[in-house]
Image 1: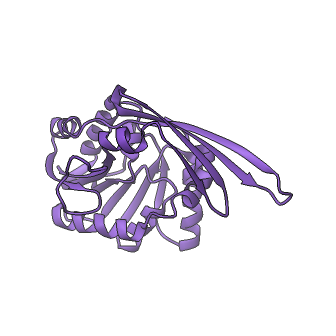
Image 2 (image 1 turned 90 degrees about the vertical axis):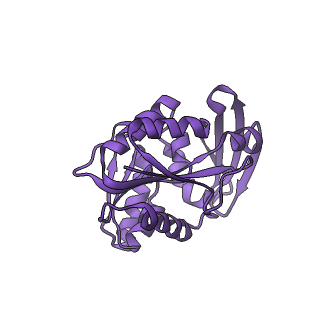
Image 3 (image 1 turned 120 degrees about the vertical axis):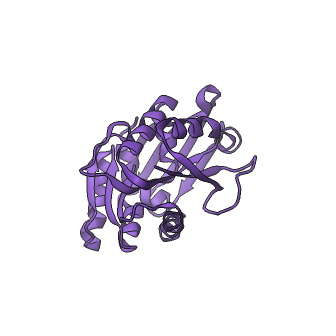
Length: 248
């Protein structure tokens, strides 16, 4: 698993199209529908730079953000300082995280599950989540589909440019776990007009929905719903990201 050291610095500028307030409201709707544990203790698993954690805190949740990357958490702490929120951030691996007391809600958003190294690591993470949830608590997460990895990301290249950075993005697709190896090259312009280059490499996998469902039920979860991305619509053959809602 990558530490996303250079990626952390540019992450927010490269994901400016993500409406975190809207995503938090969507997850909040699902939490209210499925969670029956009675509390507000929410864990944002693979919280990254903390943008979604901040939105959950603004909705009144008691938030703990967990991420493997110290660099990502450094960016999150800057946001906490600016907002004055009470979010607690912890640097831990998703597959082996620990909590003080069990949570009511554990959320894992923006295809973070796909960033794990193997299907076995996804299984371990799901088992860990089950261990640290209260009875009646929910695990709500999203995952990129095999369709998206094959047909959208595939062996394609993308360019992202904004005032902060120019990013060249190259994908290489493998049928093994529907894996996409991603190579990012960042070019940052300095005041003298010269560019500094930084590079980051990581991979995403996309197990089939049936595989993830089995991991959930084997761990002891009841699967409450699958939805097409950020909706309450059913999943279809061209769904790019599935929302999973599972209850302990």
